[in-house]
Length: 171
Image 1 (cartoon, helix red, strand yellow):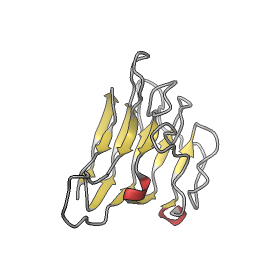
Image 2: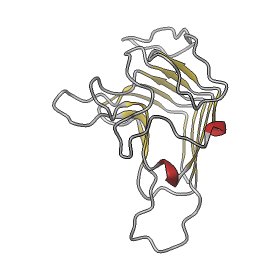
Image 3: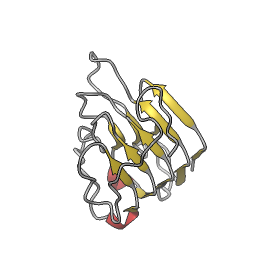
């Protein structure tokens, strides 16, 4: 698996962190700050995300496929995605049946009003179903109501020092 920790990622045109095809095993995304990522120009048909997960095993792979688990915790996502793009948002989750999410204690602050979860990736995803207990204690602020699948969700303003340029994601 992969272990992506302790990064400050800002001003990225595409995804802040991407776990793509062929990623397998136990993966951890923790203690990262992603600010103003996934911003594309108006001519692009797609959008980026703070954390884009597309962990599928290629059809050509013939070995035993290990379980895919994505642990995502203690991260701060600020203003992720591009306006007008259905594939943009804090989280872009594709092929949700191919992995088990374990998302806890993240701050998802969309002061730009963009969506928390990408709704334009095939298959169209509003929120993963049947796995609600694996999404909990995340703070969702800026894009209206929190996703319904997050148990023990928080929706209060995290009071970042500055959620606009110049960004300061400290609490």
